[in-house]
Image (cartoon, rainbow, N blue to C red):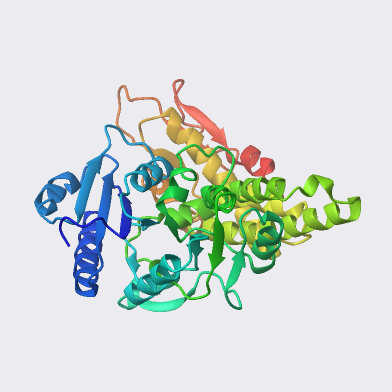
Length: 401
């Protein structure tokens, strides 16, 4: 296909995931060459330190591969936008470096776009896979009952659709002229997928289809957090920003008071679902302070966001973690922990703090660096020296009571 203008640009931002990137490039070179589709793979390296730049030099002899390396690490969204803006194909799609396309569906959806000049974007859910089971399929990230097309400027119906089916418009195939007026790296206070899809609907028709065209890691064999999970855990508040941005284009300000209250209720319900996901992920990751705040953000609308026993555990561990963070920030030595704080509690502390703990104070004579003591019982830390600091855990627990 060398020398032909690409029909499809597969845009892959990457950062420090060399093995996944190698699999990605090899797979897509193989399947789309066999399909006879003029295509390109646009890789943008966000200053990886794992040898990605050296690997990319070895694949530049492949005519379908284009490679760029950023001068500084700029983060996911900036790298996503940079990659998409480098596309030269008639259509482009974003793909995570650990994701794989479903070639037959991509080809089907491209044929649909080629036959319909009004269609500027196709959206679809993505198929979640389990790496622990050899990449087997789990289920689509969201479900819709069938194709749903929105005409250019039809923001109100698209908003209703997204709220009803809890849709996340992240995986898209977009016509390049629409892309040029849609995608950028600037998206403060808003989840990028809602922003880009709303912009695209202002330029052309958008079609949502129920069948995925990409497989995405749902359960990873790698302990490193995936980008999608990071967004669910730490950027969930931007989802409201995205819905509000779309709603502003739907002219919801002209709604009657009752209809406006109904819209607010739907957005609040959407956000409660996302907060419930976030709190589960934070508990699993042992992010206890974040889980505590998530609980109270949910409790403004829901009487019992989690079971009482779990909430008590969250409160206790949030207090312990907060005290440990402050103690570890004071001294380069291991934090000396009161034996009353049992091993079951210590086991649930994040690993970076667990590595900084000790049960025994050094008995060596002479000078020693200042030490931090974490006290539960009043007599613990009585042997602390003048330069040491004793942190009273009871006060920290009271903050999260």
